[in-house]
Length: 226
Ligand code: ADE
Image (cartoon, rainbow, N blue to C red; front, side, top):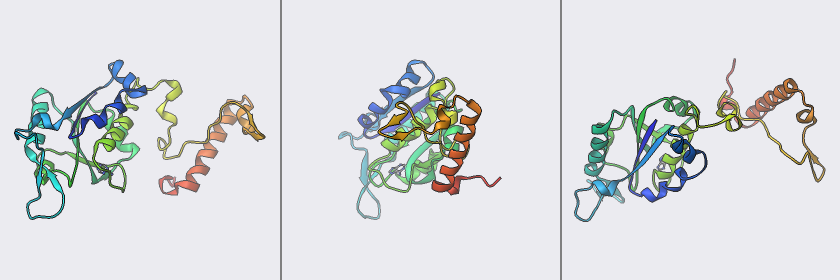
């Protein structure tokens, strides 16, 4: 899979992809992540990528020219399955969306800034608009990193058995159960006996019960009623 991220502040996207699972996924050749600095595409001699909003009002708007030129350049090199715009008024990101996107070949993620992008960018190029939650960030970069992380970890081969995504929260419409590690007794606070029983069936049943209990208590909205 290849992910191209278009950003006005590319330095914000350096560290999320430079360590741990996301870095290993790239080294293993399972994903290619390319960050594109929008200012490299502007024809403005002052490297400007924004302008005042027509009709007035506070806040700058990102201009269409550098975004369009960057997207067209990328599209001349390969075909993209989705061109995604990170924006607070998009569709809310869910595990289902990340699962679907993890099987795509090439995607572009556009990060918004200021008051957002000229509407014509959205009308002409964008195929999907995503928000990571009902709050406003200073820009789309952190949201793009969240989206990319949630997709990349689902690409086959990225996670090993120990980090398997199959036991993640949300993967079966359930939150993950509690987990424990050594010591078995921390100042009198003991690990549940069943986890030390050595009986894999009992452990599995306990985990399922705990996952259901946690989901009922915390997120009844995601429980399937069947
Ligand atoms: N840009 C600013 N806020 C955002 C959010 N919540 N999700 C996606 N992109 C954003």
